[in-house]
Image 1 (cartoon, rainbow, N blue to C red):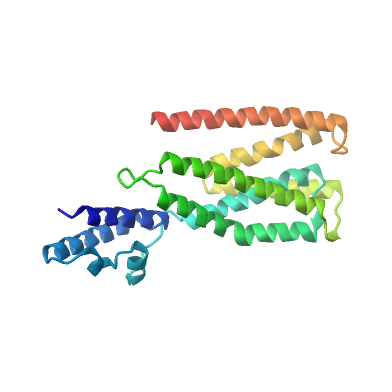
Image 2 (cartoon, one colour):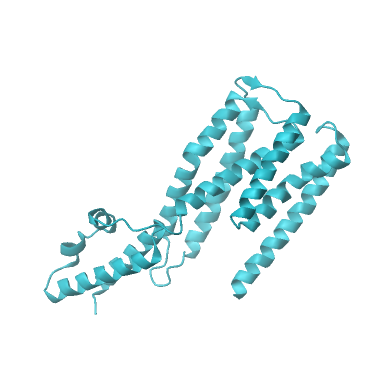
Length: 259
């Protein structure tokens, strides 16, 4: 049997590997190999530091084998941000008031370059610091922090979009409402095709649901997005879509709990 200190190190090692998105099979093999080394060291009267250096991160740096990544954590986060861009862009394109300005370009470039990286760092921090060593599940505090961070991050995304729209540096292109709508529908088609082909049905449902309020207003009212009838139809459709989305999320979460 290993000492409590060594067992704790092994669990931290496993959580770190999970956070880095390493392959389960190779991760298990490496954990067993490390366990054998630690048992041999303790039998010989050596301590944990003599084998690992005392730090999970430092020990990982000494490994010569790069474990395969199969859950693609970074790729998943990048896909989420691509979806967020579509979520913010497609409805305004369909509505016909998307702004082709330098400030909007800076906003989207910043979102692509820094968004996924910063999101990954925070998620990884929460995952490592607030994962229970016994169950390998995120603690309640970790879940709360994830929720708080999600709200703050969405506020920053929406706030950045507002500032980019409010303080337009230079408009380098202007398209008609019809051209914007065609671009929005084309982009919507690309997103739907991409999510269907990758089997991400929830994203397919969500991107269509988010576009429905503007599509409904365009179909039943048309014309200027500032028109009172357009706003009313769009608001009603948004309320219905929100109710449907919340219902789907509720039954999905209930199913997950029951399973």
